[in-house]
Length: 118
Image 1: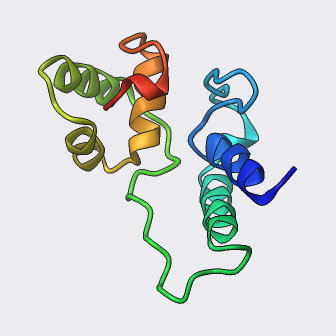
Image 2: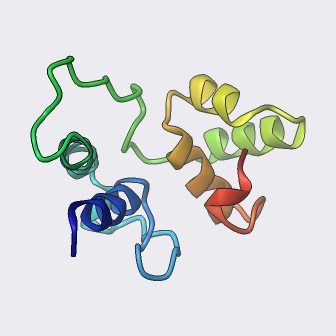
Image 3: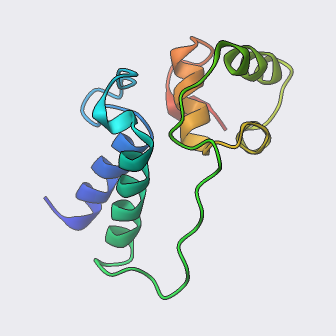
């Protein structure tokens, strides 16, 4: 396994997906814990920088990154998605990463795969 393969695997876990199947991880998975998600993102960033953290400060994760989704938030996400909001707009409105938005839309049955969110 090379660094890029490791980074891709870690990024999938950080986004809440099984890197082998592409399926969303169970809500009770250790990889769904906020601290683990943050650690996975940092590891992916370090691998992308060639094994060393970049000189620039790390990008802050959105406020809701790694936190559980409420039914109300799911409903608001679904409504905004159906109304045509972009991935960036959804991520900003819900204080989540684009990967988290894509993962949730898959889980809600609104898109087939994460890559379907543009």
